[in-house]
Image (cartoon, rainbow over all chains, first blue to last red; front, side, top):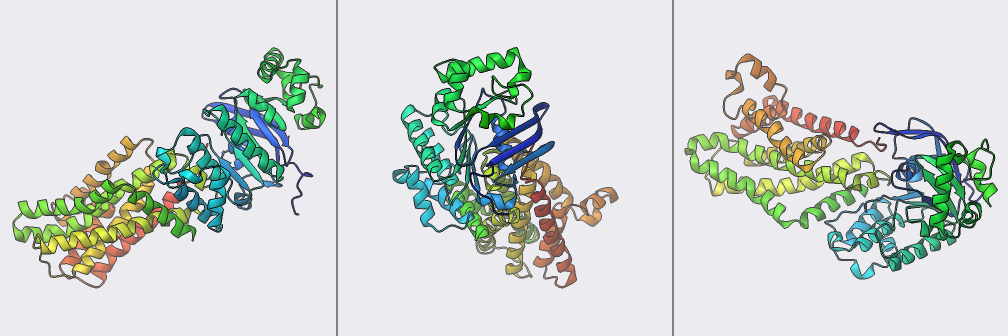
Length: 268
Length: 239
C-alpha cells in the first residue's frame, strides 16, 4: 500500500514503553505526528526527547508498543533512505574534511556526487569544504552533520537539538533551512530546549518526565496557558502538570480521558 | 560500492594521521632489527619469521580496536546504522583498509629483515610475508570484536597486553608447545596465535601440504568467526 502524504500521520506511536538503564522513560506513550509539518519537541533535559527521537529512527530498544513511521514499523530497512537523522552530538568523522564526510555518506546512499555539493551548499559550508571537521566551529560542525541529514530525498528529517549552543544568527539560518524543507513537503521533528524556537514550529510537543504535557500549536500554547511568552507558557503548563499529572497527557482544557492522539486535531 | 566507500573512508582517516602511519610502517622494522641485533644469527633465523607475523597482528589489533571504539563512542556508528550500509560492509571495509596497510607493512618488514638483518630461511619469503598479512587481518577482526568490550580508549589499549602476551607466551615463541606442561599445552591448542606461530614456522622451514594448510585454515576460520561475533556487537537498536 503506498504511503500518502498528509493523509497518514508521519509518525504514529501506540503504547510505547521504554526503559533506559534503571529509568522507565516511557510507560505507555501514545502519539500521532502530522506529516509535512515541523514538529518541535520541547522540554527540559532528561524529559525523554532524545529517547523519543531514537524510537522514531528505530535505534532504541523498546519494551513494548508500536512506532510506525511513514506507514512502516520504525527501523525497517526500507525507511533508511526515507528517514534521516542527526544525533545530538554532531556525528561526523572529526579527522576528515567537511567534503570527505558528506561525500562518504553520499556514497553510502548510492547518490550521485553532485548531491554532496548540493547538501554542502544547502547548509552554507561551501567555503569550509576542505577544512577538517575538528578545525570547525561548533556551528559549522552542526551544519556538517545537518548536511549529511539532507542527502537524498528524505521524507522525514529527525534532528536532535540541532541548534544547541549556537548564536542567534546561526539559529535563524538553520530554522530558515528547516522551513525550506517543510515547504517542500518534508516532515521534520526538531528537538530543542530553547522555548523561543517554539514559535518557528508548526506543531509543538511539550514533554516532561517521559510524558506529553501538551500537543498543540504555538498559537494555541499561548492561548491555552494565558501567557504571552512561550517560556512562560511552557512553565505554566508544567506547573499545571505537576499539580495534576493525570490530566497532563492531554492538552489543557480537555477531558482527562481523551486519548492524546486526538490532541492535535483539537488544538487546531 | 558501500564496501569500497567505507574502506576508502578508513584509509583517508589514516592518511590524515601521518604519525600513526609512520609508526605502523616503522615499528615492526625497528623491533625486528632490535631482535636481530641481540640474537645470534642462527637463532634470529628461527625467531625472525615469528616476529614478522606477530608484530602486524599486534599493531592491527590495537589500531582497529581504538578506531572502532571511536566509531562506537562518537555517534558515527549509530549514524551509519541508520543508513543503507550493511554491517558486513562496515566490517569488511575495515578489513580491506587495514589489509592494504598490512600488505605494505609486510613488504617493508620482510625486505628489512632479509636485506638489512640478514634473515636466511629455507622457505619462501612470499609465504612468510603472506602470513604476516593474514595475521594482520586476524588482528583487525579480533580488535573489532575487542572494542565492544571497552568503554574507554584506556581500556581498549590494555586489551593488547591482556590478549597478546599470554598468547605469545603459550604459543611457542619462547618454548615449543610440545614441551610445555600438559595443561598449558592444552590451553594453547585453543589460542589462535599458537596457529599463527605454527604456520609461520612451517612456512619458514619450507613445510608444505596439510601441515601448513591446517594452521592457515584455522587462522582464516578464527578471522571469520571474530567478524561474525563482531557483527553481533553492532546492534542497530541499543538500550
